Image (tube, rainbow, N blue to C red; front, top):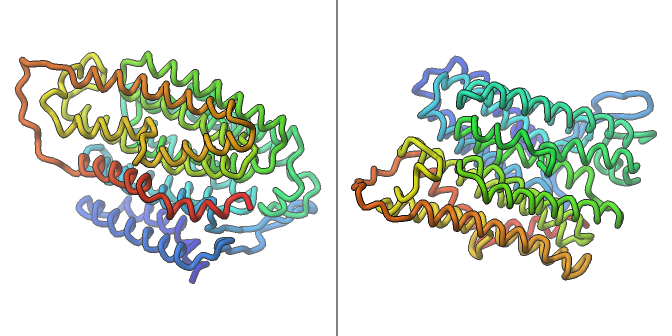
Length: 464
């Protein structure tokens, strides 16, 4: 039963994506809801029946020289929350986009294909199987950026593909070096003897393109700005997590003092850089894109904390960020659709009589700042705590600086949006599906922040 459930997590969306190409338009939304509900049920079954070490399914795949590779997948404490995140964000983004994009069948099929391959990345427990899923996820995500969005979407898609493929070359070379004379490609064998320094460096740089860290982030702003809103939700909420999870699970485990120092410094530079750039942005979508760079820098700092608490905080940051960033992009898309613009200068004062939107902005902005009661507060608290315990309280100031920078640019934007504009009289429109999705993501972030025990109990097994 568990083996079937594990395989269905990635096979079901991949197979359904093909059937959506020939489904009646009226059936797309019901099929999406049914499929999302079924996936949540599968996740729930695995969660309830999983022992502390997780559930696993393994079969021999093939031999390459003296090394044996496996079709090996599993659900365990390190990936349970990210599997749930992929189900939630993937289906909410699909429902968000189905009512406003052209060529909706092709769009829906590509989104589900992306979701299926991303699940494969999180489930994979053989390094070559992980790489296959990681590369496969690039194809539908490239087509999504290329096919839907602004006028510059095609160049943004090409830039995204070139950066990702360049990183993948380094990643593959690092994997080959890391395998060395290992008899297996399984995660237990892969982590058992540690990674050679060159393999560690190549894999770190290659995967940091997808995290992303400065200066490997330059594809991100253009891709987010040009992509359709629902695609931006998937890019930030799911695809960025592929690089972060792969680094934590395959590369940044059991690292030495020099490597830890490198991660803390690199993460600190990325955090300060992203915060400074975000503070000068005038396009809401580009501003939110750079906040992703800052929030993902916290993952690197947590991994370099030289403590289990820091590592667990880094895993939680991936999950919490995925929820709040998807909500922010969904909210920006709603504002752009209703007010025909997303530049701060165009929106200045136009929220003064839209109290519901002001409340959404306040909850999302404070959520992104890591305010108590929201999901990111827990992960950033864990990272600060882990860094302090592992390498001293002085280093703990580093993620604290990130919190301050985030507060500066979000509060500046909120002040601009809520200024008075007396000449405009508006009647706020009734809530629609897109706005309901925004409220849903805000609510889920609050649930995770107010009752984090579910996720923290899972993470208590990470690093053992």
